[in-house]
Image (cartoon, rainbow, N blue to C red):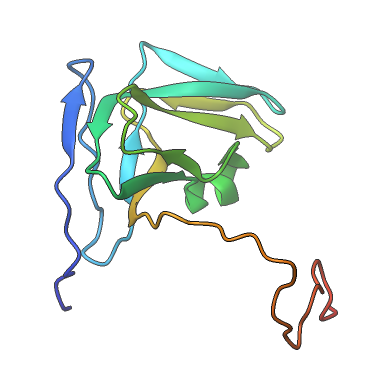
Length: 151
């Protein structure tokens, strides 16, 4: 496997001693695993949501963002996913990284400190400059959206 060329240094502060540093679980992984950093256990009943702290804060370089995304295994096996997915961490945010989990499953979900709860994907950010015009150029698609190509 070819090493990735895009590397970025992210400063990380542990807000609690038990906080885990995010890590890539395989050489080809795009996302770093985020782990819960909680006292005791949290049970998320079906239909409920919970804000789960990770015990870390990060300092991203200007021009980068971090996207917090759900874990597919939790979604498939337990119906656990994230609200506001993906969540965006801006370069100027210095607070604790937390994850809003929701239980779409049919059984209670028990979460313990150290459990993997989400993925963190870093991405460069482009800044947009909008130019107001009277008309946009035409395309074959035009304004077709939301299922315009059929099933």
